[in-house]
Image (cartoon, rainbow, N blue to C red; front, side, top):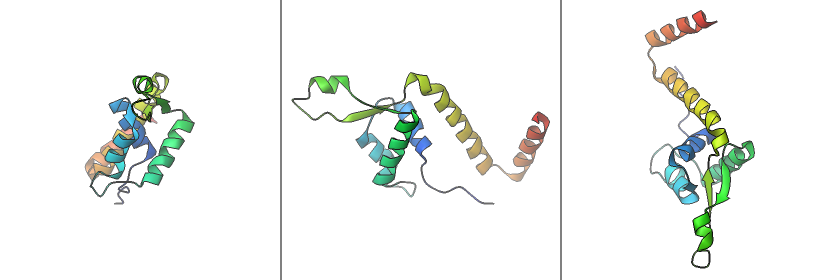
Length: 122
């Protein structure tokens, strides 16, 4: 049986941002690039994924208002958030990911049961 690749997708990043809330670049680096495991991506790929997510509208790139008030004391870095209007789409992605993980990890008996349930739905 073929298993999935061991890397993160852009939707994994969107799901992480949704769970954490306001997310900075450093947090994303620690989670997806510098996590010390076999499952990681490059900085460039992380940057590209973020651009794609912003273009799709799943993630907004904005500035923290509190940091903006103190900009003379430190630099203002962008933060990434999932807009409330896109939470439903993020939940759909989360559900699809859960289903794919179940299928990848299931034994042949469970796969047969799942196939029977799909046939009944059709």
